[in-house]
Amino acid sequence: MNVVQVQFTPWDKIYYFSQGEIKISKGDKVIVKTELGTEMGEVVGFMEVADQEVVAEDNPADQENEGAEKREAMDEEPEPGRKKTDKTVIKPVIRKATITDLDKLPSADDKSKALSYAIKSKERLELPMKIIDVHFAFDGSRVTFAFIADGRIDFREMVKDLTRHFGRTIRLQQIGIRDEAKIMGDYGHCGRGLCCRGHLKNLASITSEMAELQQCSHRGSDRISGVCGRLMCCLAYEQSGYEQLAEDFPALGAEIKASGKTGKVIGYHTLKQTVDVEFGQNNGDSRTVAEVDIKTKQILK
Image 1 (cartoon, one colour):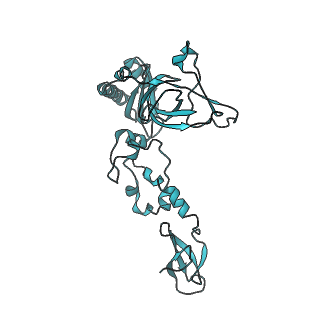
Image 2: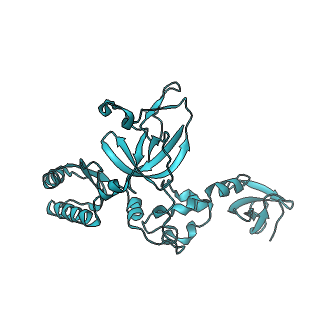
Image 3: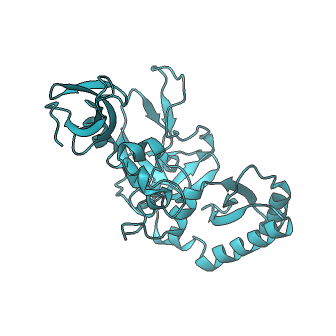
């Protein structure tokens, strides 16, 4: 089954819908039915799913009673513990968005006014949060504000205020600081636009171990961190290659023989496929450090 990956806002997760017979390309705007109402989203990708794993609902545009739909769109991952015999039900793409649909979207001025009021509301209530973006549901039923904060925020009074002002259902969604950079955009150390602003849709977890394996942690956190203050996403691009190169490396502290001498591994050079070995600690000789080729076990210098 052809499954379409749809995203409603840059800071929200990706949702999955069945393509059906509709011809869709990446970047197209489509109309879909969600559990919260009708939405317009952007197609960010496609994937093939085995027919025995999923089943598609009938397109509501072909049903006499659209209110009969009550099942959820498929999440990014199957529900934990789901039996192999179970099938995940996913909703279909209703249709591609038309010019009339696009004209219904709120203008930049409408979004600016909504953000301005939300910011004034949180300042009046002295809430320690930063309002980042606003999303108006396509069917006009709700308004969602994205914000960042250091911890949990009690924003119940703010929701009441916004509900009175906009006359719609209000949702406040906390996002991460990397999502803020994804929305605002900027340039990375490479001089190009941020990856998360362009081609990178899923923000993977970046760990300090990646920087250590790629031997760039010594450069300091400022040089390996992005504009968001977190470790750069591009550290994950070559991680698998470094892991393959490091498969035959002895562990730090392990003893190896090289050129007829026994020493202890104290460092490594992944791309050069060499390790630093300290000799002389076992036989009383003066201690020396040499670079050893891990394949030939020969001292290089």
